[in-house]
Each structure stands twice: as structure tokens, then as C-alpha cells.
Length: 309
Image (cartoon, rainbow, N blue to C red; front, side):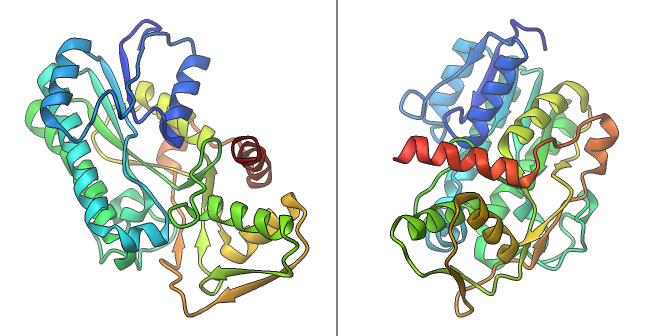
């Protein structure tokens, strides 16, 4: 990519898309094609193909998606599979029609089997049953990965997929029911401190382990891989270490300064027991996550306070 290359970042107002935009701008890329959902509905095929014909993007970061945490995935199962399939199908096919030079599809670590060996390697995909609580979303993401490989195999398109660990950071979604794990922990602990609550109640047992990576590192990986990865197979990106939910919330409490009790509601689902990625392929190319967990939480909490209070 040159600095004046026409680059379309799909989903640039979201947490991942906005981080990719910031990383591109830091690296001197100036010709960014950015369309809000109001200006371009990616679920409408005709609108997407019309935009591609007019804007003629050369590179695409496909970060647009309907996303959410455990509660949202359990509640909006039809939306999660339908909307994501529509977005992916329309953008990937339009990219083929327009002759886009390269496309990066942002997948998710939830696509790995529920009982997957740890750490999870790219070849473990499709080796077992998915976690039922988020299987519609996972199926959609798996379909996106297969679309990239299929367009590569049939048409020679340079389309590939990136599989990030759980992400958090700037511009995260702090909706009380639809947020991801770190955003949910930050908002709950902040509220408990602000209201002088003696305890915080969290879903599940607190024993599941999660690999949490700052979204700025994910964006750096996306821009790096767009320029240095030349395969159609998906590639993992993660921090390389994981923590139990209890350990995560304890760190959040330390950052926020909350000293109340932690209570876990074991009647609520835990979700998958562990999700740790093997990111050795990305590391072999020269990429590595840079932000440690505590620093990432500090930055995320400062952003939460700035945007919500």
C-alpha cells in the first residue's frame, strides 16, 4: 500500500474499525474511504456494489459486524447470523467484482471449537462443536473465512482472515446487556464504586480464562498483516497470555480503586472454558502485541470516563 492508496475501512465507527483508521493515519495513509452506516448500509447488496463502483477501493479492511457479549449473543441469535452474513457476502463479492487488490476480514476467536486444544492453532478450526451460546455469530464468521479462501481459490483474489483474541479498549461498547467481557467488568465495577455498593455480582463461576488484547495492538496487527501476509488461510493475533475472569475483575478493581467484595452467580452460564490463541505465525512474520493488560485497562477506563461521564 502507498500513502495515497484508496483504502476502505468497513465499520470505521466501531471499536476495531476506528482503531484501524487511527493506525493507518499514524502510518501516513491519507486516502481513506469512510462511510457511516447511515450513508452506506452494508446489508444492502445494490448499495454496496454501487459504492464500490464509484469509490473504486484498492484495499479493504472488513471490520464491520454486529457484535456483542454473552447476553447479546444469547438474545439476538437470528440477528447475529443474518446481519453478519449479509455484510460479509456483500463486501467480499463486491470486492471481487471491483478487482480489489487485497481484503482483510476480521474474524473472532469464538470460531474455535468449544473443547479446543489450548493454545488454539489455526489448524484446529472445524475440529469440533462450537460453543452453543454464540454459535450463530461463530458460524457467520466461519463463513467469512471460507468465503475469503474460496474467492482466493476460484478467482485468485488476495483475500484473507485475521482471528483476534478478545479485544477491549478505546471506543468499546459499554451497553449493560450487549457489551463484551472487559467493558462489562469496567462498567460494573465503576458503578459499584460510584454507588458505594458493598459487592459486585458477576455471571458464572469466575473460572473461565480469557485472552484480552488492547484493540490498538489488533489494529497494528491488521495494518502489518495487510502488507506482510500473503496467504489465504486465517491467521491468529493475540497477546499470548490469558487470565481467569476472577483475575481480570480483580485487576479492574485495582485500576478503578474499588475495594468491595466479588460475588459470582454460578446459575448463569460461563461460556467457553478457555480461549487462548497460538499467535506464532504472526510472530514469525515480525508482529507482537505491545500493550500489557493493566496499561490497557487504564487507557480503556479513562476513555470510558471521558465518553460516558
